[in-house]
Image (cartoon, rainbow, N blue to C red; front, side, top):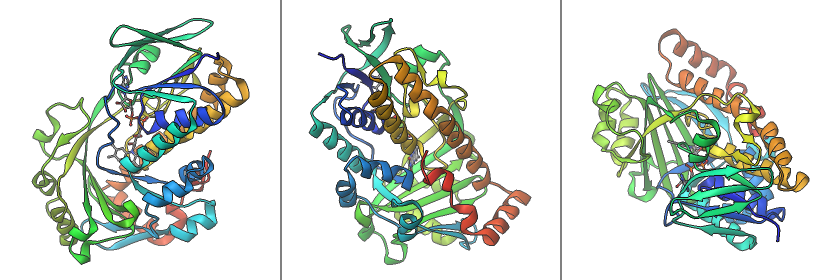
Amino acid sequence: MRQPVLLAGAGIGGLAAALACARVGVPVQLFERSPTLAEMGAGIQLGPNVTRLLEGWGLQTALQAVAAYPENLLIRSAESGTLLGRLRLGEQALVRYGAPYATVHRADLQALLLQAVQACGSAQLQLGQAITGFDQDAARACLHHADGHQTQGALLVGADGLSSRVRQQLLGDGPPQPTRHLAYRALLPQAALPAALRCQDVVVWLGVGLHVVQYPVRGGDWLNVVALVESRFEDSKTGDRSGWDHAATGADLLRELEGETPELLALLQAMDGWRLWHLQIRQTISSAAQMAQGRVALLGDAAHPMLPYLAQGAGMAIEDAQALGQALAQGGATPAALAHYAQARWQRNARVQRRALRNGRIFHASGPTRWGRDLAMRALGERLLDMPWLYGGP
Ligand SMILES: Cc1cc2nc3c(=O)[nH]c(=O)nc-3n(C[C@H](O)[C@H](O)[C@H](O)COP(=O)(O)OP(=O)(O)OC[C@H]3O[C@@H](n4cnc5c(N)ncnc54)[C@H](O)[C@@H]3O)c2cc1C
C-alpha cells in the first residue's frame, strides 16, 4: 500500500487539494476539526483563472447549476453613486480568457468540491479531527491529533487556514496580526428586495476608508453584499479578533457609512442578518521555503492569507491545489515534488497578496489619490480594471 498524503483542514483549499491529488491517483486522507462541513453564509467571486481549473476538474456542470455569471463589474462612487468604471465580464471573459467570471455561495462551492472528492474514491475525509502538530523524518510525515493518536503518511499539507497549526510549527512566525479592517457580510434572496435594489452585476462602491461589493449568487436568485470598512470607531477595534465570525448589526454598519449615497444606504438597510469579521493579516510570503520544507507544505490561507481586496484568496488556494496535484503527478509523493510545488507557487501568491494590499489603499483612498484614481478609471476604463496577469492563470 502506498502511504497517503495527509491534508489538515477541509476548507475550500483542503477540499480542492484532496480532489487535485486524488485525480492524479495519489491517495489522500483529509482531517477537519469541525464535526460537520458547514461554510458560512457568504458569497465568493471566482475569476477565469479559477473557473478554468474547476472546469478542467470536470466541475463545469456542477458549477453552472449553482453559480451566477455577471455581465459587468461596475465601479461606483459610494458618495455620489456616479459610475466610475466598467469591466465587461460575461461573454467578454470567455473570449479573453476562455473561462467565465463566476460568483457563488461559499456553501455551494464547498458542496460541489466535497461531492467530487467523495466521488473519486481515493480520498478519505475524517470530520471532528483537530490536529495539534506533526513530526517528520526522511521516510514519512506524521500528524498528531488532539485525541492523542497519530497518522502517518508520505507527506503532510497544512490547509488549516489563517491560524494554521501546521504553519505555527513549520515557520514559528506567531499568530496573524489584527487590522482595523472589518468585513460585514449579508445574503438575501433577491425576491425579498425592492425591485430597484435587485442586481445581476458585480458592483463595487468606493468610499473613503471603505468599499462595498455586491453580486448575485445561487444562479442569480440571491444577492451577496460585503462592506469592507477601516473602522472609524474606537469601540469597533476592541473585542475578540481571534474568531472568524461575529454577529453584527446593520445599525453598526450604517453608522460606519453615514453620509454615503442614499441608493447604497437603501441597499444596506434592506439587507438582513449582517455578520462581522475582523480581518487579520500576515507578512507577504517571501520564499519557497515558507510554503514547503521536507515532507510538509502549506496551502491556501495557511500559506498566504490576504485581505479580500482582490477577491482571490480562495482562488489562490485552488491554484495551489492544481499545482500540488501536478507536482505529485510528476514527482510522486516526495519532498522534491513538494519543493517543486512551492517553487511554482510562492511568487504568484506573493504578487496577489501585494496587489490585494495595494487595492485596499486605492479603493479606500482620499484626497488627490482618490481624484487621480477616479480620473484614471474614467480615462483608461477596462485597460485599468482588467488583469490579464491574474485572470490568464499562473
Ligand atoms: C470578507 C471576505 C471576502 C472574501 N471574498 C473572496 C472572494 O470573493 N474570492 C476569493 O477567492 N476569496 C475570497 N476570500 C478569501 C477566502 O475566503 C479564503 O482565502 C479561503 O476561504 C481560504 O481557504 P482555506 O481552505 O485556505 O482556509 P479556510 O477556509 O480557513 O479553511 C481552513 C479549514 O481548516 C480547518 N482547520 C483549522 N484548524 C484546524 C486544525 N487544527 N485541525 C483540523 N482542521 C483545522 C478549519 O475548520 C477550516 O475548515 C474572502 C475572504 C473574506 C474574509
